[in-house]
Image 1 (spheres, helix red, strand yellow):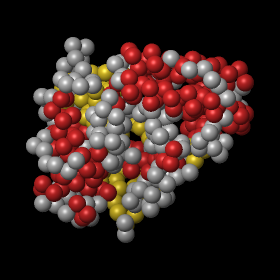
Image 2 (cartoon, one colour):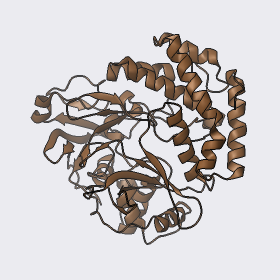
Image 3 (cartoon, helix red, strand yellow):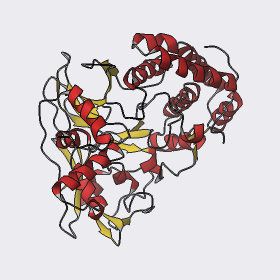
Image 4 (cartoon, one colour):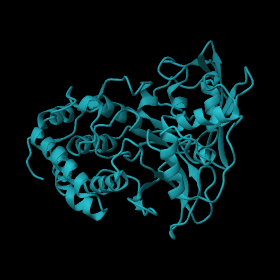
Length: 420
């Protein structure tokens, strides 16, 4: 479970079986990652991060090594986060490996080809894929793991989701139209598509699956671009929220994914960023005002829908095999209180009690015209005002519906609106 000392990692962008672009190799120098580009990558004219200096023959040291354990932000995006890290700890203990002796390169080798996006790391320390998937069993056992108990399915949980980010347990699977579930970490079987299925953590409301499904429907009604999502029935209790993977293409291809945290080299847990700065980054990366306006609408939704867990790892960019960058669809949209009851990202400096004036100030600085602003706010307001209807569509409990509804009403009043 550990690389031989001094072994560099070979990195490639695997867009498809016939379109693999070697990126180079990365090694640690006194705890800081150093990247050496491959000639093939230089010839491709692709970039890993649009804010990096243009690729060249010089070695590239991590810009903010303290933020990512010594790694470049673009590679740190691939590291297991929260749930995945817990599984790596358990796997290390089971194999007799000192978890604290694992370097960030060891962890990337554990990820191998199983991370989000198109980046792949070799040599790999990951296990093989498998076919039989029992979502009810995995959901139950993931709670056991979170509560510190052992589980016989830890290896399967690690293989199916140990490389994915986020705090909630999740598995990367393949689904077909008949509702059959297969392993979908590496290869997607013919007739299936790549999806993420989320389970409840001990800190979530019992019906977190229906809640996130209701928020997904509400966001789409608000004009927020999202990947397809649905609620999968559980054997007992509320169902599981599932969303199609936007980093995968039909036929099993991949897109390079880069979070705003990786792009800006920011530690999301400590960073202070305003939505205005994020909108500027969207313009620089995508070079398209339409993409800026998509992020603006997402900001309005997060404010009015009380989604305060909106830090810089919750927004991402995608690059296809031609090098074209776009804003990734919104993800992880749900009711959340945020740190200290505030948004991670401020709006014109405000983390709570955000008013229409603050939103207008961001729009004005980013050149978004008044008609676009008004249309976005009106559409988001209309969708949020129908939260109870969306909640009913997905069987959300009366208790959760009432609690969320009260919070949404308070937020609208702060914003200067009363419709709900």
